[in-house]
Image (tube, rainbow over all chains, first blue to last red; front, top):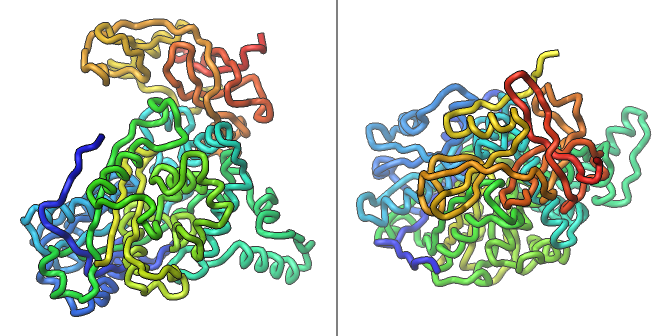
Length: 421
Length: 137
């Protein structure tokens, strides 16, 4: 039984911003963060004075390796005129900016600061796929990368074990992919804002124009079964099971609960935050779940007094389609071995009882690793404030949303619950 | 032809493991105080923090816990091996080891398949522990 934890004082979210995600040849990390920051400022209903920001916590994972530039805290604080106020970088692989959020919450809860900017940024697309894979493999544990376990392999191995244990198949993973694309189609900031059906139609049009044989796929799954359209990367992971390489940034403005109404009449409150650490593939007797996610979830549920059924919608870390199914189970939304059935039954669709990854998720929104955690919370902010436009979840009395972020092979996992009051 | 794939980089903790491999022995650490068998090697026992350790030789037999079949090489030296199998093997003695399955096609490999170690002498200094189906003898 985990110790039940509480914040020293309440913390509210009063603004959020996110750059478009994608592959941008002519935008660097500073450009991307500026895009997120300016949107964040304009999102604060009663306005925010940047001079009131006490400190910055910034998540970033791989810029040292990909851009040969480290020490991003002060670079970003200089960009937004925050220097000489403190800037701290957090690193937890793909969960880096969820850690920034958490540190920002603690800094306010302790009473030390009142207004804190948290966020993340990552610039990945200027490197080849091989270089990016090597860079991301820095987050595996030492023996994983050396024997050929890069990330598609890690989640492929997880899928093989899950299939063996619960009887799921690749067809079930396709349900996740199709849903993610359907949601991302409604998100103009998503890297792939188009459905699988849109993709099929554009390929058919292209073939017709070029006078080539026109593909005849019966439906989306038929397209995903076609090895020319959806080649194997690391079986059972095919191309459309994997998230893309992305650039992007996101940020969130946190303030002490007692001053939240100075910024907006519609703030969100941090109801629960949890974080866990994991031990790598070799150490786990069973890799069909992530111990660190379960730990983080228990911490967040314990702190908030909420149960999995109280979470009305959630972003989860779907770096691979298989990952989404496992997270649904680890977070307690569905029982172990039943996540894939829930997806198949449509329970996690935008119009289902438990919408998951309404943004399109990492798979389609994009996964600029150090920005992902903050961007998930940006989505929760948009949904809870009923500002998500076409992809707004059709839930009455919307009150509680959450985000789950995972780093490495489950080495760092977080779960954050936000609520309206 | 020179071996072009990544090679182990032994340190004080892992040198006995790789020295064992050279002699075609899979060596594991066993805590002298609590008896916990561990892999990879480390300076203290993660359960009781004892640094008293003995090296034991594993039988080299186990079963496939899970696997993945690479159809895309991220390192040029692996291109000729495609499709190759990367796996987690559960050893008889308990530890899970990350390895490759050889001597078996990607259509044949299965979870729980019995396997045994198959040594690949890749350089003068290094032999790598890979695993092959146990019935292939």
